[in-house]
Image (cartoon, rainbow, N blue to C red):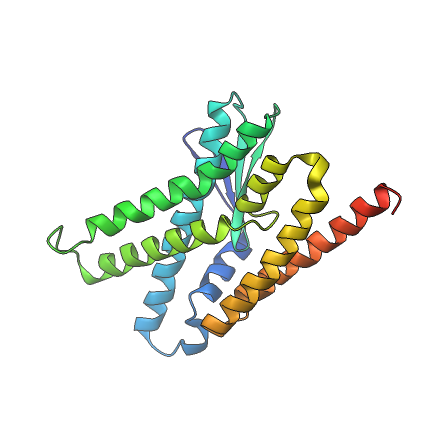
Length: 217
């Protein structure tokens, strides 16, 4: 378990985070050379930095709205910024949700600009690390903004529609999760993200049934 502080925020990195990043690299099944091992390790570093920046964006926005105690935890394929105090308005919740993918995508685009032809002559290892960081940052930021709860896009949708329309939020979330999961599988032939989105769809389905029962349906 790795623990440190970043800009005053306590950060915890769980062991599963590294394993999932290694799996996401796509190189574990082809681990037959030092070059592939280096590729996996660089991907893990790039993914760790990108996801840390994502959660830092959430934490900084929470601090902006007066929450001084925020803990960052990186686990599995992502992470979470956990406020220890205070409550946010619906508008503030939306801005907090936007801040993570916003900062992450800005950093990814900045790195791409640095790598543009004529901007620098990077060593091959650093060039690969920067490229992986940019790809992970932009892909994860875009994926996180799709309206699937509990991803940031789902949180934004929930904030926009409000608690009284939670059933509509969950129906949209289920539909989008299934649709995007199928499209990603057809495009990549990988089961990783379809499984993740399918799990979210199942969670949302259970939450929808619970919401219906609460209303006496």
